Image (cartoon, rainbow, N blue to C red; front, side, top):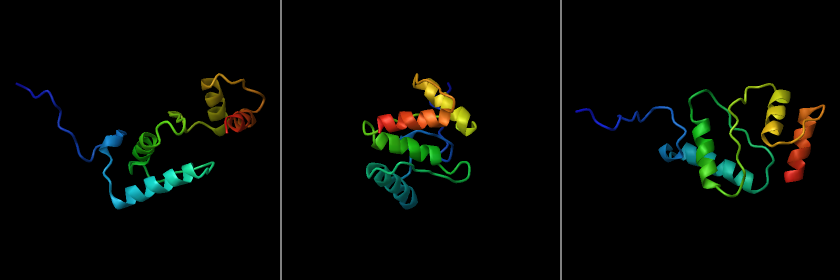
Length: 112
């Protein structure tokens, strides 16, 4: 009889924040980004090569700060800037003016 549970690859790719291993480097990144957001930094960027856990860290951060911020998942983040801004405005049911970048900045100021 086959097992109902599939074996879990401890090194597999996941975005489940429960799978985050609290290593010192990961803890420093999480705490640094969390402090930056809580003190009012407008932008935070996490960069690095594919597969190092950027998305996992962001999901863990979202769990930690649940209720403090509105988070938005952008599955098409590789879109050109203007197209990405237009897509975000559409998701928020906001009007798209001539320049979607300017329109999104105005929406962000309104929500700030």
